[in-house]
Image (cartoon, rainbow, N blue to C red; front, side):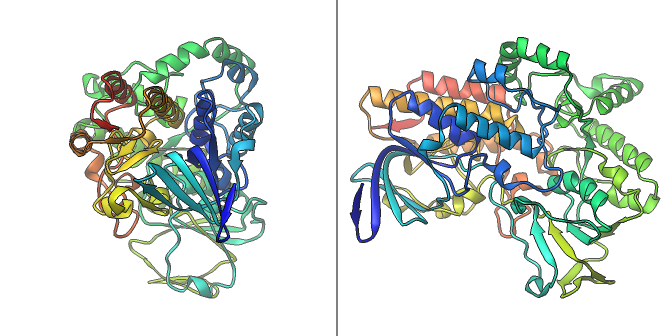
Length: 538
């Protein structure tokens, strides 16, 4: 390692940013090419979003058997999941186990944040500078920064005046928070809040929930996995994985035949929805109906079914009405919960509708709405993420001809396949905007992207090529396709983080590819099989 002007330089073949599941698998794969590869990770250990999101009740909404790697049969057979849906601590343990099993940590630089990444056209290398005052030169820069890793910071007037403790769900203290006997507020009722509210309510003296927009949620019906279930899944893992790769949602376990809800009689619809409500899990409830996401009549029926369930569960009619969404079901990510709506029947839980009583300021003692002053010991902000683009745009990324990613994306993210960006050679974004990512099983999406990037770099090295980037025409055509497919659904019918509506000033663009993991996988394969059609290779 050379040293100059107090900056340490290091030359690598590949720099990977992020040591979550995407970054770890990318490192594992690239080692097979005998490349000099390192990961830069801002956390102190592996796990990505599961390292940071330790809020009460944090849990995956994809079944454990499928929210795991498929690349190693030995790993699949050795690791045993305890529950149908894994909680944060178990997923983080799994990530640590993978890192140990494949000796990944030796090539991971922890506590290292990337400040900037700039492409040097003369050297045909990326120059990456970190908070540790180190510079890396790399032929390839791979962003494994995750889709839900950049939290939306709370922006409330008077927050600095609050004399109690306040926390953000996406940056929860690793040693936990003592809520016993405390008067607690939580602002937001998105996915993180839906998971955490029932747990917090059991511990806090009083919990006051401040809601802007109610969320659709169905029971997760989580439970311990039986010995027979574990044996059955392990003996059928290859079939489960293969099926998952070629389904719309990347899910192959406990799948039900796809059907149109409008093809059923009203009684049959109710029977089918009740059956799926009883089974639980968001992938079971909606993904099997092919018309709910595209036909308003089908969507209205499914939405009204959930609304009636909420009114049945919540005893107080006024509270039930506040909790009942009126928007399209599925335009926001459908939540899967454990006793979420039941929690509002507790005597120590109060719900405030901030549409009719907006929060005006945080005070020394708590917060004030337009109607009342509240005193709290703790305020929790479940205010979500700057999804899909936030982590990338938090880094000063510069392509060739001094193109800033922030400028290129000022009117919304643009990419080819959600994998590569015109003007940014040798730069890859795992599960980036323009790919299925958050609309599918993330582990399936991650493995598909990592394997595609691996094959691409392998081909470039074999053919002695130095640069690859999309042609502007290919990028434009892909973005037109992403927009066209999204416009043919009901996804645009409400404000959600899918379109960046939760971040003030963010351009309203539907960011993930809604065409399905199966369709997307075929498109990627066809492009690579056709000599990387749409790419410029030098």
